[in-house]
Amino acid sequence: MHSIHMQPVHFSEDDCGITARTRLPLPAGRFAAITGPLAKRGIGFTIDFETGEHIEARLPDGSFLVAGPTFDDADEELETAGPQNGWFVGWLDPRVGKVEVEPLYDSRFGGLDQQHGTDVAPMRAALDAHLDRRGVPTEQDVQDRRNRAESLLRRAGFVAVTTGHQQTHHRLPSAMTDPVERRAAVTRAIDYLQAEGFAYDFPVDLVYQPAATGAALAEPAARAASVTAALATSPTAAPTPTGQQAQTPPAPAPPSAGRPGLRH
Image 1 (tube, rainbow, N blue to C red):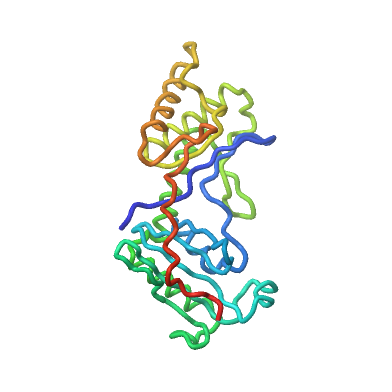
Image 2: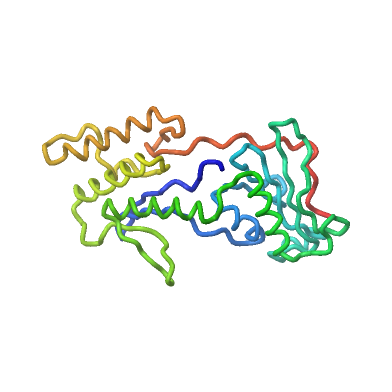
């Protein structure tokens, strides 16, 4: 089993206060049947901006998925969120010299799985089976990890916010209006997250800086100093121009040689 990945905990401030988010809204649109399951299992993805016809996802072991719905012609592609000619899921592993995408599932006309056509369920089953074989953490594993991050936010003073019976994010209490107290809470949350290996990003003015002085600020300032030092030395994070922590840049996209077109 590879290490469990999840998006960085994102801190932000608006007119309603300071918010911490551990998840983004699940993707919608014509790729959702593929990107939704990937997101739930902690896998990032990009759309092939050259053609816009498929997504690419780098798995934790360094291999890649290439997947998407397929269409009979461009006009139909623009008018619908689903495929007219089935689904394609392929795999590429440049680590072992693979330069061609190996089909994992192909329900296009003439494909090995053409009997399933545009049915989503068999495609999803094939996708999940491949992720399992590659040792990708399960949706439950990722959710457990996210639950831990959220418990640390609550320990630091954040409260859960629910919308439509579903938890969406965490926020500092509205009664906490003192900027000093707010910075202390955010600095404390980041300290807790850092200690357990979570990635995070934040505007620098939300935390105490090492230069803070005064007995009342000594403990938060020390925590902020440890956070700043971690940003400078961590092998998995680097400071951005705004002082936020960023995840390691993704590996280069897989070679395009031999990649099959997804349009029939």
